Figure 1 (cartoon, rainbow, N blue to C red):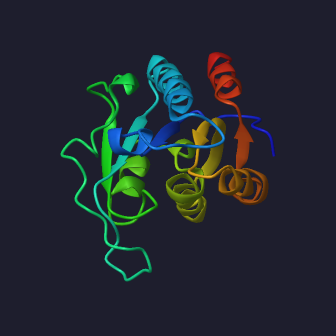
Figure 2 (cartoon, helix red, strand yellow):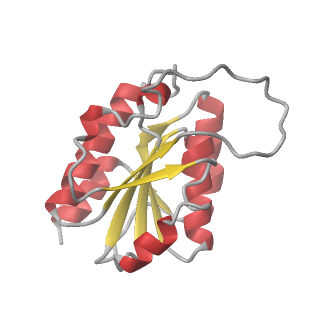
Length: 185
């Protein structure tokens, strides 16, 4: 369902826009474009005094998987990109799993701020963004996804999330459409 409305207390959640992830080859959109649109969303949310939550990942869940062991990342791998223009009023969430709600205090933070709806963007669409969107939906938040302010490591996985998963958990729209709704408030 295309984005139709924003609740009076909507929060923005930006997923994994950190140096080590934005440096990767992404599809269908270059990471730089996603960062630019995400920064515009953050600026608009701040202008309207709405919460901005910047999420970064610093490790992985402890369960076994079939991925080969990875070398230690560079020291600044998890640093948020400066283009987001982090402000003192922004909330930073550190996660160890794909989704931003598990063991992070994010749900409690959103509830304490009176948030009833979240707009989600970031990298990677089918991993951190989709997992966070599913968790937000399951927690009872209204969910909106800024589909041109996210990208993935493969175009196929991005399109699968946007076309098949996201319409089941919320509304989708462009960053510009979301910013336009904010301006109508």
